[in-house]
Image (tube, rainbow, N blue to C red; front, side, top):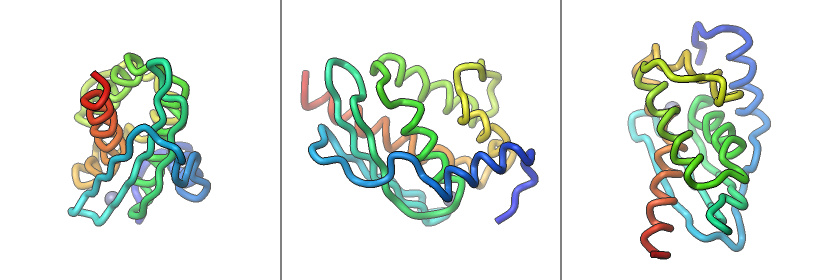
Length: 146
Ligand code: ZN
């Protein structure tokens, strides 16, 4: 797959795809969620360990296109050690960016590399998959610990 993305951004995405961060399973974990994007065949599993209102540890595994897997790798790096409140905000910013809204990119770090993906509607779901799967995991965790 080749996208006419900016070269630097393409490099960041490929780097995360080839050398994914926080890949694997987490044992023990607080919650595990699975998500898939049937349009492209992407699959993601996210394990999260929560402590003191923070994401203490996170890991993912999955398969699919470079965008989906790179986005998952970037997501884990961005939310690790973050307060759940900040994580919710980051997920919100990312989703709005993917839907073409103007967002403050300063907070996003490497994730900004995915901004160009929003020009390719068929790929937006690929980029969002890890994030919606994380959201699902955190929702489940919140239900279990009132
Ligand atoms: Zn995909």
